[in-house]
Length: 326
Image 1 (cartoon, helix red, strand yellow):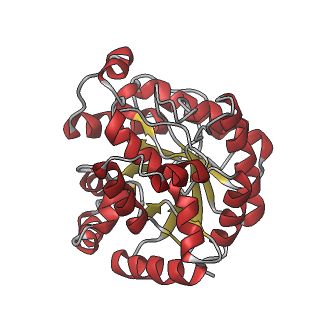
Image 2 (image 1 turned 135 degrees about the vertical axis):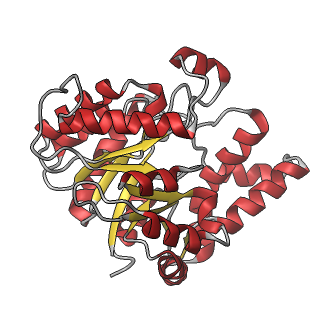
């Protein structure tokens, strides 16, 4: 079972935001040494807790520091861009890191209305998304009216983030797919995965490839791992309450607020629920839990996306995750 890593360039309370980008590059270097198959980065705009708005730029930096690990996006939000421009960016990356580049695609728009307005897109239907994927693929393969440069003998493979109808789109276009988030907890996740394979229409010899993405964090005990998960779960709670996704905070300060009963009842309930469902635990716990998911979905690859405030603890967790399914 291949294991890969997704890094969202999370900012941390009390640290300058650009440092998060350098942290991402260093994490890519470590991921390569630990044997991860891929290192992916994300695209977010105007979000206080995330520094990366341009996956292609960040991947170019990671490519200069690595030599073997695959590099990709999880993902480029295609409705925010013209397909030709995305094709040019990732063909350039392929030219700089031959045979190592992936292109993961999503259809999410900006986090808030002002961001969506600034990006110039207020709607992205499933049909529009599929059409733009086809345009992008034609550019990558050199069959579009305008040829994207530099041309590649083997263009970067495409993967679709399976939000909404993304899984059906991936199957219909013969592309890889990534399932993550709440969908992993759905009772029909197994049937969704089976339908993807059943409805898959090959393109130029492509075969189904399904990744499952989760915020994996490993520590000596389940309780210690949940403490690692606390900053990200708290950020999700604050995003729902305040409408802004904040930087990661020190778990000690979060616990102090909990113990001082400074949280509202709804905040406390969401925090408890988030921690209870987090993919955080000891190696034994996660090996069993992830194993059940892999058996249910028949997934080909795990894309780990966990993050915590303490970078040293995160590095140790990454090292354990790399060995989790051996």
